Length: 297
Image (cartoon, rainbow, N blue to C red; front, side, top):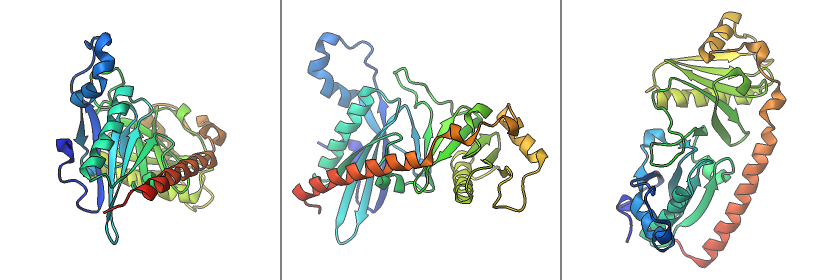
């Protein structure tokens, strides 16, 4: 029987996303009976909760999610992705996998299933979220031990990595988290800053501004001031003033432009791109095997 959360899904082209949420923690589960009841317990103690469409693209590292992509060409087809955060629990990950099977059953067994791991997602999955997928630290409140994101926190710093498919990762809001080769977005109070490293490329600058606009829309209800801090970028004639740069580091809470680490500290974008291509190739191979043995409606 399909989970109630999956009633009437996959009827229209587009995305639908659920986060796996714990209902009852396993703190008092007798270990002696755990193996006998683990599958039933997972389904009873966790539930898929719909993610508001306005928050699509944001994924907490401490959680697991199910993403349904419905496509209409000559006929309807479905892709189910269960996404596992870097700090998700084994119970949540297991539930996401089982719930994906349950969702597939609700769609008549016609969907293609994909496993996505934070930082190693397929290109297909990343393409759903424009301008970029965004990783948030911690997870929603639960009975487990992973960190709970403070929804009221006013200061968040994000690093933007990748070429074709961007990833936006939350990092510690300090100058040591930055480097001169990447772009960063700082959300502080009512302001959103884009910091363009002096060795960042012009296309990265444009993508960073798009990400900042998305953050302003999702996290600030479309309000707030957007400031772009260009650090002596060769592609632009007008650079940020010393005052603007100082304002950024004041909002960050520490440091100055001279203390920003060299570009090498940020890692290689090509390594990130290679991981994405490798994940895409694996996903394509699995998908082809699946399609060879099943028919879509």
